Every structure is written in C-alpha cells, then in structure tokens.
Length: 462
Image (cartoon, rainbow, N blue to C red; front, side, top):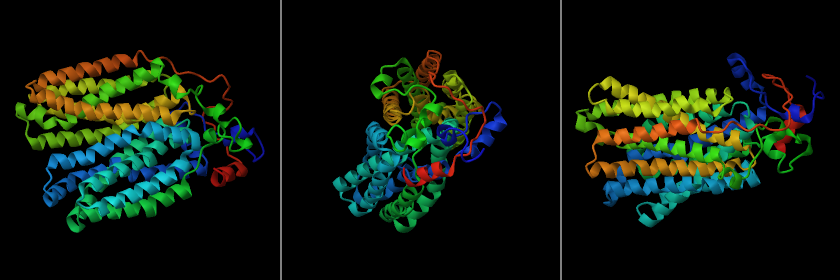
C-alpha cells in the first residue's frame, strides 16, 4: 500500500482480528510504532504499580512491628487499607482519562506516586504521616497504572484487547511480583524497610515517569472524540466494536450488572480460599508446607489463565467464551473441599482456581470495552474494578468470621461453590455483543501501513 492510498481512517487503524490462529499472532505486528511504545509504557507502569509493591508487605510487616511496637495485624491493616481506597478511586480516574486523555493523567499521577512513595521513607515511624503517605501513594499509583493502562490498551489494541489486557496488565503483575519478592527481601534485610521505599520511589521518578513522558501516546480512537486532529476522523468508528455508551447508560444495562456480579461472586470465592487456606485445610490434616505449595500452584496457573482467556476473548464473538473459566472456580472449590482425603485433588482444585483468577483480570476490561465502547470506558471499567476489588477484599474477612463462629470448612467451601455456580449461570444470561452501524471495510488479518503523517501526529501531537 502506498502512503497516499486508502482513507485516513483505514490508514490509521490497527489490523482487524484474523480468522486463523497463525494470522492472529502475525497481525500483532501490524500496529504502528506509537502503539508499541505505549504498550511498553504501560508495562513499566504496571511493573511499578501498588499491586506489585504489595509484595513487599510480607517482608516489612515484621521490621515495622519490632521497631514501633505496633501489632502485626495493625501494620498489615495500614498497608491493606490504602489498596482498597486506591481501587475505589478508579472510577474518578477513569472519568479524568476519558475526558482529558491518558497522558494528561499519567504524568501528574506518576509524579505524585513517586513523591508519595519517597514520603513513606520520610514519614518513618510517625503513624499518622506514614498512613497518609501510604494512602496517597496507593491512590496515585492505581491511577497512574491501572487507571491509565486499561484505557490505553483498549484504545490501541482494538483487535487484540484480550491479549493486551492479559499480557500487559495481568501477567505483568505476576511476573514483576515474582521478581520483586526475592529482591525486596534482600533490600529490606540489607538497607532496611525505609530505605527500600526510598529506592523504589526514586525508581518511579527516574524510570517510570520518563517512560510515560517519552513513550505514552494516545490512540486514534480517543484522539478523534476530543477533536485532536481531523486526519483521524472516523478512526474510532471504523474499529470500535459497538456503540459507545455513557456511564449512566452502562450501569443500568443488564450486561454490566451481570458481568460485574459474576466477577464479584467468582473472584470473591477464590480470594476467600486463598486468604483462609490454612484455616480451611489444617483441620483436615493438611500440613502448612503442602498448603503453601498448593497456593504456589494456584499462582502459577493464574498466569496460564491470563494468557488463555486473552486469546479466547479476542477470537470469540460471544461472551459465553468465559463460561469455562468461571466454571473452573466452582469445580476448583469442590475439589479443594475433597483435598483433605486426596492431596492430588487439592492441587488440581487450586490449579483450577488459579486459571479462573488469572482469567478474571482480563474479563472485566474486555467486556466493558466490547459492550460499551471507548467513550466512557475509563469510568465504566474503574467502577467495575472498584466493586469487584471490594468484593475480593470483603469475602476473605466474612469467610474468616464464619469460620471463627464455628462454621465447618466443608460447609463454607460448598457455599462458595454454590455462589460460583450462580456466577456460571449469569454468563448464559449475558446478552449478545452490540454491533456498530458503520461498516468495517478492512478484510480480516489485513495490517495496513499508516502514513508517515499519522505516526508523526501520534508521536508529537497527542
């Protein structure tokens, strides 16, 4: 294709999803350089996100407790509360991203994130200051990473959203967390917990912030609605999958209510088991070492689940493709309940829970984009994640309370399995995907070459 052939919308658009699996992977290379740079910026922001830094809590709770005399549970609460607050602010961040664009939100939020993380070091053992710094750090970090990343991936990788969500956002968290665990342990033991947060804050400011400034670019689908440039006129209509809906419309729809509820039920059930595994399994004679190994199997299989669901969502024309992954939760819980008799059942059950856990991290953003388009995607996905995160946070607490009141582990696991079964039924109540009225002219698998002017616009004017 020459630089002057085709319409501007076609030239600026990414490749359409191909029919064959081989063409699907090949077409990933058809996106412009600006998209790949934006993907790298998202990857860096996710590697420095509060979700990854939460790995450090395992190693800093004891030193802080010994240094201050605070109980371990109170220290853990100091670090857990900001995570919940940060997730609950995502709808607000999403509104800002939808209105002002990813770049204008990413730069100040990443700056605030780095400064607040440095402030954790400066706060020391002053409880009020430390708690304030932790809250600001988590809130700004969630905005700079998840709040921005979901919209960037959804807008750029329109035909590979599932893969983008699973690889750039989901799997990245698991891999970076696995790297940070041993590194963070060494840092805390060698330089102390305060200096560790100082170093991380400096990395955020010296690596994370420049990456957003130099690499992060807006996609054509979000440039056009804000009137960024007439050459990109029609880019989002050409490739957005359906009519774009406002937040008020989305939250009243059957599709949003159903997929948010099923993600909350399934995810909450899995988190209840993960957080209370010892209390659930030791009464059946399962050793703590075996429990730890089974949880490791869950985490490893979650990476597999993230990859599988991403490719499955991209290549399916129905939301029912998520049914097997949600079903994994119900089956996994039943197998874990029988794990006291046969250990292999425990490990198989934990692996099934891991597959479901990994898949759920991509289901929400993909379905939000597929059902409601990009107009208010940041707000819709932010609200969805806030609600599901709240469910994942409260479910372990409620499960622990029921166990302390004398409810048997078998009865609790059965109740959680029933809740997950309800989530499976909700999948089949989801309506079909909406379709845009405007035609999509490009043939499947075609990867048009964008003209130099379009790439220049994306690189210098977004």
